Image (cartoon, rainbow, N blue to C red; front, side, top):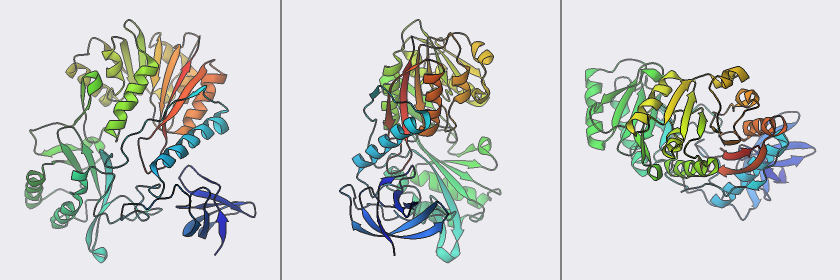
Length: 432
């Protein structure tokens, strides 16, 4: 089998080496290592390969503690020491900014990070009843596969959720619809843990009794989702604590439904919000926009500062939930919300919202290209951009700097998903 020296990592944490001018992407290989590999997909310009043996290991290599690592596709970097993972993500961010956007920040911000384990307060797990593999399987997808990894535990889930995997297998195996239940979502709040079961046919009376018994025994709340995400409803127990997360530094408690977007890593989110507010520096009397505001993760902390905030979101349902959150936290006089499709933003539609002193942008992976292109002569003097995709941040940063006249003041990574190749970041732009 061929042997080569790994040069770097790609954006999926695969080792890159070159043979005869062709790039070889090797799962599990680290920069500087000499590895033996076996290709499983060959294209004219590149190959994808499995790692067979590490001949000369990197100092950053560690033994993955999870027994499912290598099969489960939930993590990609457990074989790398956590500080080295963070350095790789910083390099991905800087490389994306330069190679895609041809921009560089004046300053690199310290990375935002938290604990490496038990951080996932949200997860979508596949469920399959596979008699040939012993019955019901619950887990993330296997690497490069639609098959479900047979998880008996998960080290990135909170311990109490990981401990539910085995009992849940037993429960689902007893249900009459065990082969008509393809997915389960987990949402962990401050006061309760919710499990959303995607059901393709109704439960029987006996099934319902089993769910109630399980909920009482394990202290969880079951939701049932018979159709799309909006069809999810609280099944049992109906009264009781609601899902919420806290931002204690700002005296906020934000309720959410299990199928609504919230950050998966609550401790890191708290640091992220603190960093965003420090960069934005909202002041009483200012009018600030929070674009792609969602439930108000940034809107409400900005409002707590005394500034007037306009939260803009494309989903009418989320906007109403944002209004509810502002009411519940005593901030209704500081916040107004609007429904707008920011992916189709124009200079006229943005101007209709009025003038803003500052702006926070927190888009999905697609980025905010139409929004930044729509900024006019009276654009905010300061923009904080929270990104979950380094490539679209780089693209949008190029417009802000080269077209709109902003200085690219600073940027840094946010390690929201340890042990994965996912790179989140935060950036600051200013103009006179």
